[in-house]
Amino acid sequence: MLSRKIGYVLGVLLLGALAISACGPGGGGTTSGTGQTVSVEAGEFYYKPDLINAKPGEPITVSFKNAGTVEHTFVIKDLNFKLVAQPGQTVRGTFTAPTTPGAYEIHCDIAGHTEAGMQAKLTVAAPSN
Image (tube, rainbow, N blue to C red; front, side, top):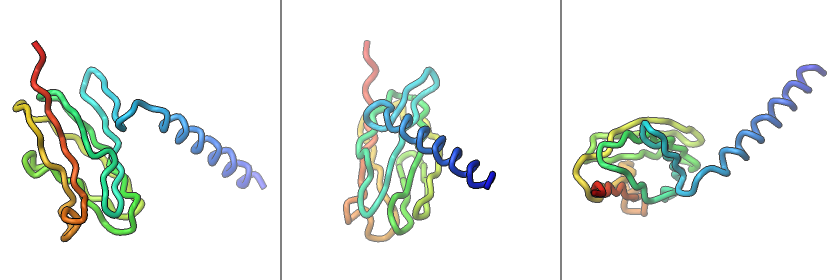
């Protein structure tokens, strides 16, 4: 009986934490003095969001959730950055945005996934004067 009550309380706390985290800033990211954290969801065959904006040299932590039924990856080839997530798994990794402004391709390198639409973009803005 006690374990059932504990399970109920933990479930309510978990749902509350999920509700609070869902109310964060748009675009799936937060910014702090030490960079930003971006939450990215993947499924068959998409990334959400499919655009990440960054400042040159900014550290970016990606929380990558695979909401799909097959393995997916989050790859920025130009930065030698790769995350791999099994179905239902969330993984995290951090990279530093390039100092050169421009657009950098993000894709899933599982055979056929990029072609099926698993593409996104990292945009590094020019520094403002």
